[in-house]
Amino acid sequence: MKKALAFLLLLLLPALAVAEEGGVALDKAPGDPGDKASLQRGAAAFVNHCLNCHSADLMRYGRLTDLGLSEAQIRDNLLFTADKVGQTMGIAADPKILKEAFGVVPPDLSLAARSRSPDWLYTYLRSFYRDPESKTGWNNTVFPNVAMPHALWDLQGQQSLEVTESTDEITGDKVEKRQLVLERPGKLTPVEYDRYVGDLVNYIAYMSEPAQGSRKQWGVIVLFFLAGFFVLALLLKKEYWKDVR
Image (cartoon, rainbow, N blue to C red; front, side, top):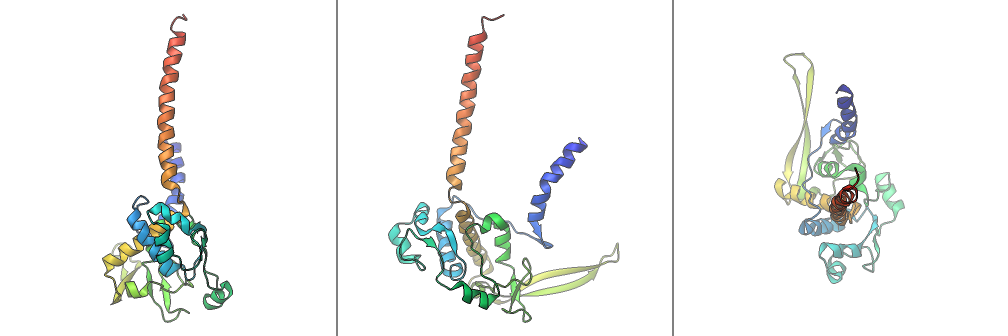
């Protein structure tokens, strides 16, 4: 029994490490890979706010037709960094210029949700705050000293980081509490901004594995097929061996 519990704990350790990184608890991303309306809104948010600096070279614009968009809609509303729908989501900016501006080349976001997790991205995009000492004027509680500025500040507004200290009544240790406070509202209310970021992260997660829905559907079909085949094999076995003593 103890060995089984120890083995289960070992399996859960990676999940616990992802759930809380750098001492910051991650919020659950509200994304639904089957919600095409959310994915469409997320694609528009990605093109308008992320694709200026971050590429998605493993994703083609044409794949957006799987979300219910026509090629004409893609071409008229989302095709900003390419000439044809069949091209990948690259960026028009020169990587050298981006490196000079931010110190690093902004990473490709094709597999960001798989390398970081949707929960991490969702919490990260809601955790920027003003920091006059940083190069960009922004910092982040999930990714301290990040080189990226807050690209969505006009939507969320400006947050500040409030740090308070208290003393634990039992141990006498000092406890530090870090809290983000919205000082200047943006164009969206906090609820609207959370929904906007949720749609954006939902689309980034979709880019990481566009065939996820189809893969799961075929997986269920295969399991039903194997279950039916097992029943037939069992009946055949009983019929074949019924006269054998």
